[in-house]
Image 1: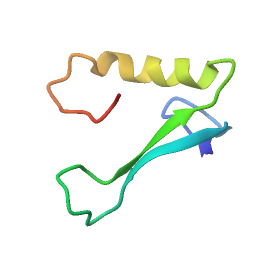
Image 2: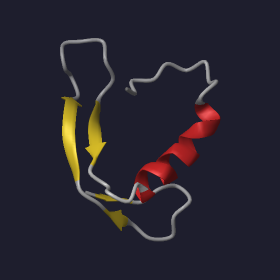
Image 3: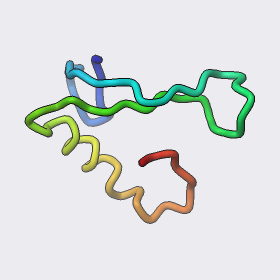
Image 4: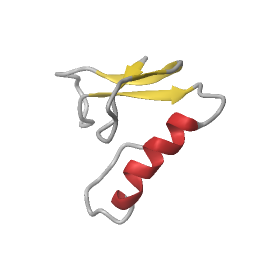
Length: 66
């Protein structure tokens, strides 16, 4: 998978596994999206994502994270 995070200058490549998918028009109440499990052995990508999401922990907005 290749991802460009909001604070990054260049995209980063890492391996991941799709753990759930909810296509547009699905017959449930969940929003369209994809859940990925990171296979990042040195945890760099995970730490970067957690840093970006950290300020949102107390947000009143619902999330679909696990």
